[in-house]
Image (cartoon, rainbow, N blue to C red; front, side):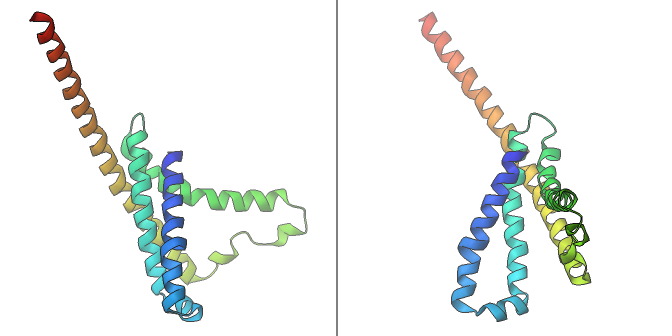
Length: 160
């Protein structure tokens, strides 16, 4: 599952910071990009793209319950940030405890965006997990066929 999370994080960062943001900087000024919402739509699609592959990798590498491992990539990815925020606030001194670790989630728009992003990530992880499970079973069947063919060839060579 860690492989899936890291793969999703890597692909997401590559797509957003390596492809989308430079294009937006070249063609749209930063103020317009922040206000338009177009970048938000691209961010949701790039997250879905990244977590599709993350769910697929986790599902393919899982020892059992492949779909569950693929979907847990999205769940754990969303759980990591709040846990780190709470631990950071809890570990700091008393004066810093007055700060709110979830200050960015206090508006309805931010909660809606986070909810939509969470649902999109879970759906993408599930679809990727199904694909990873299918790939695993296909590769196992192909490996069995290859192994049995090699065994038949070696047996026929021994007989002749």
